[in-house]
Image 1 (tube, rainbow, N blue to C red):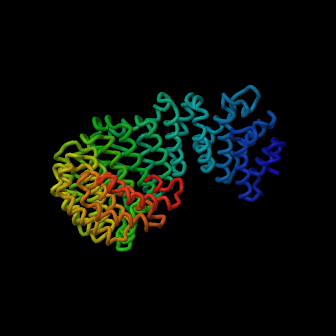
Image 2 (image 1 turned 180 degrees about the vertical axis):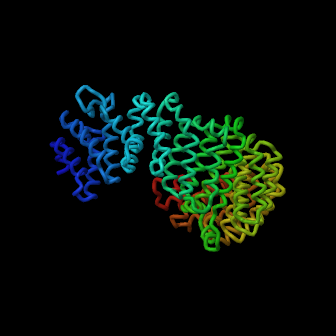
Image 3 (image 1 turned 135 degrees about the vertical axis):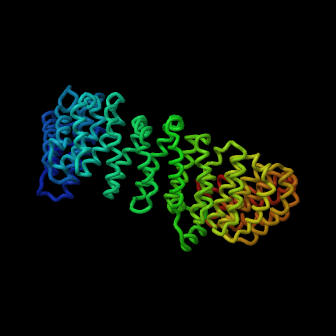
Length: 585
């Protein structure tokens, strides 16, 4: 019936839906559904779905007038905002210069009187109904793009709306006024929004008041809009930052507050700080040198948010590195981890190294294991930007000092960071530090926690790939003995995978000299290819297959041919999906 009415009775359908939405006696769920259908029907799209385009001109104007009238008099706030959504969609269609189907009158673009009505309803000095005023301001925010030019001309009326709303007693009005200012700054040309820079300190005060009143949802909404404004018009904040360091100080306080502040608020506050650093790095380094240290400190503080306890540690230890769930656990920690990388990359090591190294040193010396984890993670995330060799050496010393820590996550983090250091500072790091790093890694292959042992092997892969042939030859025998031993004794998939990759690295570096290990390792690899049948073992089979091919290169085709036939045969017996990892290998 609905589809038939859309096609054959556009006037009756839309007028009828509007009546259902406006009738107090109808069940609310039905009114809400009617509002959704009506919004869809007035939204631009195909001729079939854009039902409003097929209404007669008199009915178009009747519907538009009724919608504004019902919006003003409605007492149900949810439905009032739904009607506001419908008006906003219809306004887009009525003002589109390239599509006349939505125009209210033939040959005439626009919606006369709508903006003036919404401005009047949005001004608390003219509209004493707080709920209606809030809905009207939300509608006004949605109309900023549609009426961009008209709003640029209506500076006085707009200024009164902002002034009276930001100074209002009701936090809902303050919140939506805050979001309106952000939208105006993001959409209007700078000349038009420049007078709003006078509200910068008031916006900070509004956030403080929302935080003090523990209105977390409103605060999060404000921060979302604040963040978008910082990305679009960072110059809005220059004067305020230079004179008072706000809003950076308030946002930093929110990031660091562990009790009573939603995770979403803390994340959003840090995201604003990081985004601003990315948008204005040179200006900040020159004009607000305390900004970068503050943001780095916030990142470090967020990285303390790691859950403690035996159960959590066991859950972490048993999780494979390639399994889902890692990002879901300790979300704040992971956000801080990502943020510190972005900040240091944006600001540059020249302007952030002093603060970074001071904080890393401070955190690493604390007894709390989460603080040490934050320090090691900060090194891992920023080592690629380090240029001075002395700084690289200090980082290396710090990481090596924590590879024997009693806490598995600290050992894991130190090894993870060493792997990153090996990638980012090769080959100088390998040349200078092999005599200390290689014996330590060999020892860590036997870590009692398999996840830590597999990370030691992963670090070896990163370190070993860039090691000179002659240096690898010095260590190869000891490492091969240990890797074969681990392959024979472990059932842990990540240890198996990383053992095979480590063997492949040794083979790749020492090339023909690897032939002496061929007879000892090839039967193990064939066994893995034949027996690893589980879906989760696809990568393991693939790595074993890849390693076999590298061994073949090392020993030559004559010796490799019989084993190669067996391996390829075993791989081809396994049915492979298009996205199967084995296909890649």
